[in-house]
Image 1 (tube, one colour):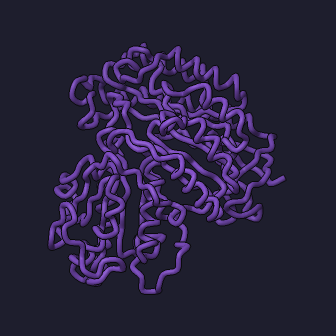
Image 2: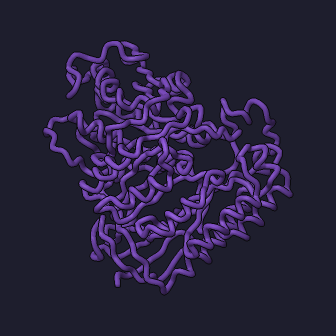
Image 3: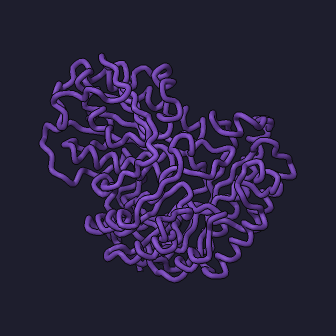
Length: 485
C-alpha cells in the first residue's frame, strides 16, 4: 500500500486473468476497468464471474472487447471526473467497431444517475451497486439495440423487456435502484478474480453517516451476509486455489449476524482449509472490540496488518465529521492493538481541509501522524459531495490553495515516515505471497508481506500463489526489493 490518494485508479482490466471456464471462439468479449477501493475490486470480480457464467469471454484490453464496463467510485469528485475522461477515451471504440457497448456501473452510477447520460451520452448502460444480478441482461438488451450488434446474446436471444429504465434505440438503459436486502448471496468472485487473493464482502452499505461521506447514499444502509454464506464463498476460493481471503465491509468490524460477532467470523474464515492468509478492511475505530484484537493476535492466518482510518488529529474536526470518537480514544485503541500485536503494520485515511479546519487543527493532524507513525496512508483533501450532511449543512470554507498546501505537507510527513519504516525492513526475512508479474518488467514478480508491504523479487523465484521467504535487500518509501532465501 503506497502513500497515495485512495481514489487513485485501480485499473485491473489491464491485467485481468483469462477466464477459467471454457467459451467458444466466437463468444462476445467483456473488458472491465475498476476505479476505487477494494469493495469496487470485489464487485468487479463478481461482475466478471457473472459474465463468464453467461458465456462471455474476458478481454485484457478494450481493443478487442464487445462490452466495455467501467466500475466506479463516488467518494471523490476527482475520481468521477477521471471516469468521465476515461469514458470519453473508451467511447472511441464504438466509432471504430460497430456494436460495442459501453457501460458505467457502481457507486458513481447510483450517485449521478441521469446526469451521466447528459454528460456522456455515448454510455449505453448505467447500473448501480445493487443491480449487478441484472447487469448481463441489461448489456444483452443494449447489444441488440446497438447498430451493428449481433442481435443475439449468449443469455438473452429474446431481449430483456421490462427491465427498469430501459430505453429503446440505444439511448441508455438505467438501473440504479437500491435494494436494502441485496447482498449477492450465492454468487462468487472466484471466476473473475486473480487466482491468488479472493474478496468476500461480508457487509454492504453503511449506517455511520459521517458528514463528509456519500457511501450510505450510494450503497444504502448496512446489511450483513450470513456466516454460512461467507464460509461458502471462502471455501469456493480455496477450492479454486486461492491462498488469501480479504473480508470487506464499509465498516467491516461492525458486522454481526444474530449472535455471531465479527471476531468469531474472522476466526472461522481463518480455519478454512487451504487459506493461508486472511485480511479485512476497513474497520471503524468506534466498533473495534478487544475480541477482534485477540482474533488477530491468536490466529496465525490473520495478517498482522490493519487499515484504521483516523481522518483527522483534531477533536473539533472529528466532531464535525461525526466520527464518534476522540483523538485520545483513537490513540488508546492503537496502543491496545500494538500492546497485543507489537509487530502489526498500520495504515490509515487522512482527510485534509474539511469544513472549518484551522491551522491548529491541521497541525494536530501532523503531530498525530508523527506520534503514531503509520506505515502508510491514503491522503486526500476534502471535496464536497452532493447528498452528504456536510454539503447541506456545513460551509466548505477552507480555500482550495490552503487545502492543497496542507495536503502537500501531510504527504511529505507520511513519505518521511514511510521511508524510515520501509528502510527498517532491510536485512530482515519476510514471508511473501506472490501476486502477479510486475507491471514494469516480465523478469520481476510482485508479492505482499504479512504486513501488506509490496515486495519485488526476480521472476524465477516462483509464480502467483506461491508463499516464499525473501530477504529484503533494499527499500523505497513504498516498495521492498529482495531475494528468495
